[in-house]
Image 1 (cartoon, one colour):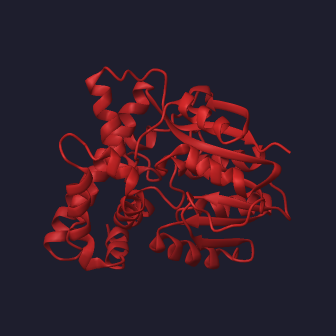
Image 2 (image 1 turned 120 degrees about the vertical axis):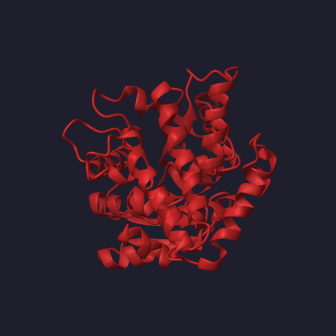
Length: 340
């Protein structure tokens, strides 16, 4: 708990954690999980508010790459994340000398790994100032600042000239877009002719039954606790890609196609026996949650930390169950090409 306490003590806007958490729950967390229109029209505030609250928890509980990955038996959690990132770089054929765009770069974990793997220069865009500050700090400490650049920029309205990038990718970030065609059209605009776009997209799979109330609640819980305007279906993603002009080269669920091993959602379930995955496991989350209740009352961590922890526990439970049922995938992979 020392690590979590140190992180939260240094959190941004400490006095506003409780107020921000209350406002988020009030606007987006009612019993009916309403506010879909508001989540789309006010998506900038929606996403900024959420990631101001959860970034420190993510880094503590998951690491510096905020995404999922399937894992082979005997493979470490960190290695599985890196392999998932390398696969994206490999499919985009990233090389030294290329200038690449990362849509929704978080604190830059995947960006730095892909820079090391490919040698390409990568520009990460993000609307969250706190995450960008953390990304710059970590990149400087890694000695990669000469190949990494960060911009405070909305990926629905990119601050970049037409045809200025050799490749574009998004790793579990375009799911936050209020309109799929909107974010894909911006990627299309800034790509050079003949260049590639790669995306790991959140999708409800064909096993999802919209008439099933339990499955609907899982979807609703994931959207609220994950700051997702609406989780798309695969055909909606494909249609949006084609609508803005992309040639769809490949579209498949990597979770469904994964070889036998450890599923992507296992770290959220976990027995807690592995030190590497303990903090993200159900047992680890319960211990963290209980400890935060005490730490908050002792005024060691900011007020509101316990409320944020509760929301993320809801996320962990909902994502794990949706993954177990096979009704949700965080890695619907799209490889698309901008025509010459």
